Length: 248
Length: 259
Ligand SMILES: Nc1ncnc2c1ncn2[C@@H]1O[C@H](COP(=O)(O)OP(=O)(O)OP(=O)(O)O)[C@@H](O)[C@H]1O
Ligand SMILES: [Mg+2]
Image (cartoon, rainbow over the protein chains, first blue to last red):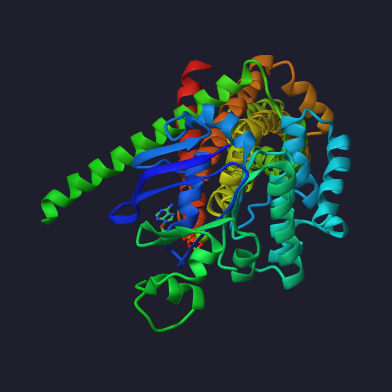
C-alpha cells in the first residue's frame, strides 16, 4: 500500500508548478506535505486521484502506474483512495447527512433510508450529528471540513489524502482530527498523505514530512530531521520568520 | 493587425468557437445516450429536478400560453369582423398556437427560467470544485448530474407544451368571448372539426426537440465553465443565447420536415 511519485512535472501554461517531484510514502504511514502557499501541494495530491494529469513522470499506487489510466479506470482507484479537498466541496443542494449518504448509496448499494442512518452514525464520529440536516451553506468552514472528512471515509479507503484538514478548525476539533488521522493509520492500516501548515499537527502525528519548495522536494525526513535541520529555508519555514532566504 | 484583416480574422474566430461548442454539445449528447442504454439514473436527482424544473414552471408557462392564445385572437379579430367569419377564429388562433407560437414561446420562457438556472448551478459546481469532489468520490458527473437533468428538461418541456396548449385554448376562448362575442361553445365546436391531431402533435414533437436543445446546451455550458463567478456569468449568458438560437434553427428545420 505504498504511494510513489517519480519525477513529476506539471505546468499551467508558462507557470511551472511541479518540476521533478519524487518521493515514496510507505505502507500505513502518516505522511505530511508542507510548503508555502501556491507551491503546488494541492496540485500534487490531485494527481493521485486523476483530477490532474502530470506533464511528465509516473505515479504508482501499490504497483500500478495510475497517471495514464482513463477516466473510467480511475473510478476504481478513487474508491480506494479518498480525498478531502481544501475547500470541502460538499454538495450545496444536499444536507450534510445526504452528502455523506451519497457514496454509500452509489457504491455500497444502500437504500436512501439505510444510507441516511449510516450517514448519521458517521457524522457522530466527527461530532457533527447535531448538524445532520443542515445545508452546507448554513454551517461554518470548520464544520464543513469535518463533514467532508466523514464523507471521504465512508467507503473505508486504504489511502486517504487530506488537503489541510485542520485549517479553519478550532483547536479542539483540530486535535480530534489529528487523533482520527493517527487512528486511521494505526488501527486500520490506512496510508495517508496530509497537506498541512498546522505545526501542532505536524509535530504531533507525522511519521515523515516532505517540504516542497520551488517545484521540488526540499527536505524529506522525520520530525527530528525537521527540528534539527541546518537548511536555512526549512528553518525559516518551520519557525515562521518573516525575514530569511525563502523566496515566494 | 490592420483593420481589413481584422474582420475576416474575427469572423473566422467566431466560426471556430461555434464549431467547437457545437462539437462539445454533440459529444455531451453521445455521452448521455451511452448512459441511457441500459438506463442508469439516480431517481432522487431525477424527481428533484423534474419537480423544480417542470412542476414549478407550470404557472409561468401557463401564463405565457394563455396570453399567446389570447393574442392570436386579438390579431385575427379585425379580419374576422370584416368578413364576419366568426367560426374560423377558433381554428386560426389554435392552428398557429399549436404548431408554432405556443412551443416556441414556451421554449424561450423555459430556456430563460430553467436553462439559465441549470447552467448557473452546474457552473457554480465546477468553480467551487464540487464536480471534482464528485469525481473523487468515484461518481461520474454525467451519469449522476447530467442524465437526470437532461431527462427532466426534455420530458418536462414536452409536458409543458401539452399543458400550454390547453391553457392557450382557454385564453383564446376567453378573448374571443370578450372581444368578438364568440361563445366558448361556439368557439370549441367551430375549431375542433377543422383542427387535426397532427396540428397538435407537431407542436408537441417540436417541444421535445426544443427540450433536447435546451437540456444539452445548458448542461454543456455549465460543465465547461472556467474562472470563478465571472465565468459562471459568461456561461449563463452564452448558454441562453446558444439555446435560443438552437431553438430557432430546430424550429426552422422541423417546420419543413413536419408539415
Ligand atoms: N487549474 C489551474 N489552472 C492554472 N493554474 C493553477 C491551477 N491549479 C493550480 N494552479 C496554480 O498552481 C499553483 C499551486 O497551486 P496549489 O493550489 O497547489 O497551491 P498550494 O500549495 O495548495 O497552496 P495553498 O497552501 O494556498 O493551498 C498556484 O500558483 C496556482 O496558481
Ligand atoms: Mg492547497
